[in-house]
Image (cartoon, rainbow, N blue to C red; front, top):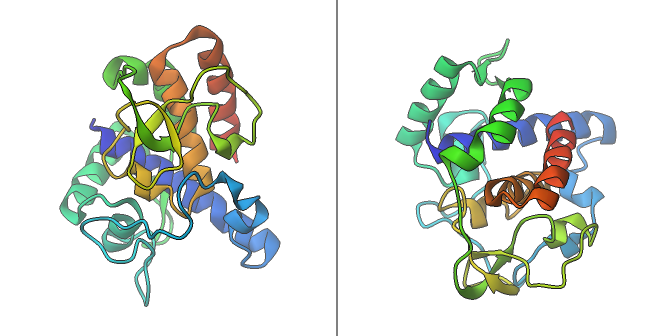
Length: 214
């Protein structure tokens, strides 16, 4: 398993949940149901992947296609195919009933993230820098957990926060969360688990469980 596999799986979970919201709320995107203050970067700046011009699939491209997933995550198309193969083999994902959909085994994924992620993809706090806040003190959580210290950040020149840097799970994470608050929340929760601080880790496990269940 590689770190991009986790990013891809979480994006698939988010896509499935957005589809449910669309059915219930008549095409109202999930980020429109939330306060836009969750965006911890300059709204006047454009967040772009180096390899794509538009992180949102257009035309007839399905978000579940290799091309669509590459555009939404910033992961290369060939690596999307490799990641899907690994996820199918491990049982963390499977092809849906239709050719255009993929299903994540959220129970198995949660089990791995809770008990294995901090050993397979550990992370340490580094020197202070500018970036996008992560962990449970990130703005995506609306101040549910406040800290007297600076929140850890994913290094990113267009970010609005400053604090100790941590390496994102995958290099395109800061841009992959651009239009996806659900993905941002899941990845931020996951970082609290990866850091392994007991108090935040226990809270993060509960938060991530709720987020994965939708």
